[in-house]
Length: 212
Image (tube, rainbow, N blue to C red; front, side):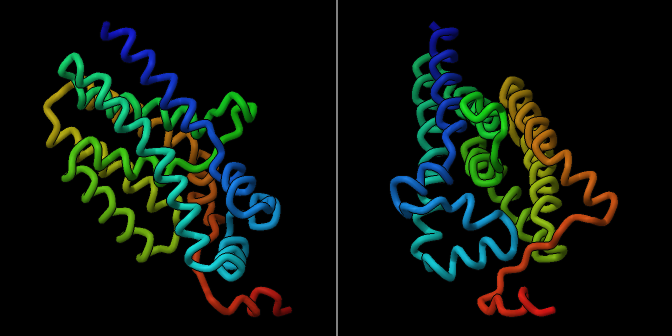
C-alpha cells in the first residue's frame, strides 16, 4: 500500500514539476511567448512588469504556486492514509524538484525551483519555512544575487530540518532536494566564484539599459 501511494505521489509531483509555467501562462493567460519576449534577467523581468503590471506578475506567480501546492498537499493526503503525511510532503517536494530541473518532456532542460522549494519548506515545518524565507530575503537584499540567496536559503532549510524535524526519512528527502537545487545552480556557483554572476535589481525606469 505504501509503495503504491509513494508511486502515485512521485508521478503526480514529477508531472506538475515538469510543467513549464512560462509555456502554460503564455498559452492560457498572456497569449504571447513570454519566454522569448521576456528573458529571465533584469531587462526581461522589468519589461514584463511594465507590460503586464503587478497583476500580470501575480497571475504568473499564482500559477507557479498552485503548480507546487497541489502535489505538496496531495503527497501529505496520500501518505497520511498510512500515517506518514510528513514523509509524503517531503517526498512530493523532492520529486517536484526533479521534475522542475529535469523535465523529460523538455529534454531535461528545466527551470528554477525557487518558489516550489520555498513553499515546500513550509510544508516540512513552519519553522523551516520561515527560516528559509528570512535567509533568502536577507542574502538577496544584502548582495542582490538571486542564486546566492537561493543556495544560502537551501542550506538553512537543511540545517533547520536537521535540528527541528525528528523523522529520518524527511531529513534524507530534504537533503536530496537540496542536492537537486545545487545541481540546478551549478553554473551559477561557478559564476559566483569567478565574480561573473549578474545581480538582479528591478527598476521602473528601464531607459538606463539602453544608454551607451
